[in-house]
Image 1 (cartoon, rainbow, N blue to C red):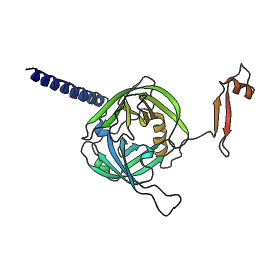
Image 2 (cartoon, rainbow, N blue to C red; image 1 turned 90 degrees about the horizontal axis):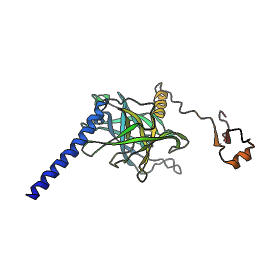
Image 3 (cartoon, helix red, strand yellow; image 1 turned 180 degrees about the vertical axis):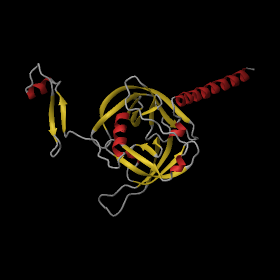
Image 4 (cartoon, one colour; image 1 turned 90 degrees about the vertical axis):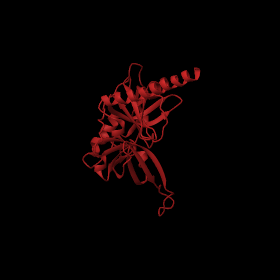
Length: 275
């Protein structure tokens, strides 16, 4: 009798767990997007160039990630996914159908790239995600991941900060900081982060110890998408100088700034720049 009770209890717990996951998916669908119809698995084959021996390349390697459909035939990924790519393959999460793709636009400084499927018909029935250009501290977010069998795995978090942070290649750009306990499933590169049913950013990096995730945010994505739309990509403008805040008393004294004045200390001007 006790064994039967334990078995029934386990069935109830399993049913509640499944119901919670299904409810989370339905709640996201109610906001106008379904993960399995808006995200594709992306597989990249790449070969790095040998700069000491330009006539040859290194050994081929593969990397996997996720791409978010933002146009009828426009899949947004991070630029580090397509670095030195020689072959790109997309796979639908819902059907497993595969199709080759190519890079339409890429900007390594802001870590964004846009892919196009070579056969657009494969994407029929999928739903592009709208871009959320402006988010705020305190906004709820959800990450879209997938188990090996294609089942959506949704994790909830919250935007806790907005800052200018270094990006992988060079320079510093706007970024959102999200507090979240991210499940490290397969294909987390290019992970989409959704807020109120819209794409508010892509995963830039994640620190499991502090449960802190940084995003390439909506405003950066919006500029990238608008700039590449005319077929001529100009990139992000730069002033051409670096500066430091004059909060340090010693630096203020060095700059000769009176106590009743405020400002910044220009520490470097790049030659030939607008500055």
